[in-house]
Image (cartoon, rainbow, N blue to C red; front, top):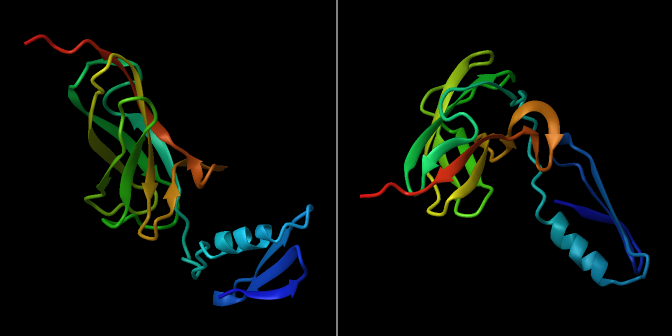
Length: 181
């Protein structure tokens, strides 16, 4: 729940003290367009404020177990990519966590799998997903991230990266000609 503290024709300040969390969100329009306030309120309504979890999700890539980068895979062939990942955070990963991969090149698609075992801090897990090589020869790339039960994504390392902590891990293949029957 957010409340407006101040309002003029073109600026507003909103606050929330939900969950003992203070947030200030200031909106200002240099050209005094009141639509700016309306659009900012739409953005504000998408924010999710929730209580502190008490632990941190972090991961490190230990190894590419299968399919090294630039492996040649025939067009249309399914393959299994496996990464060895270490939990370097303080949260235990449960079966409510997922491995999600996003297609980053033409002919690739997103997919996800749930973790099938719990991973305590400092433990490693081999995470595998089956992916289809695109039907058109060329370079294909997927980027992976983990997602916790709250929907927060995180990658490897601890530096912020776009909308998550840590950078994505990936698989990149060279799509070769389709096998001849």
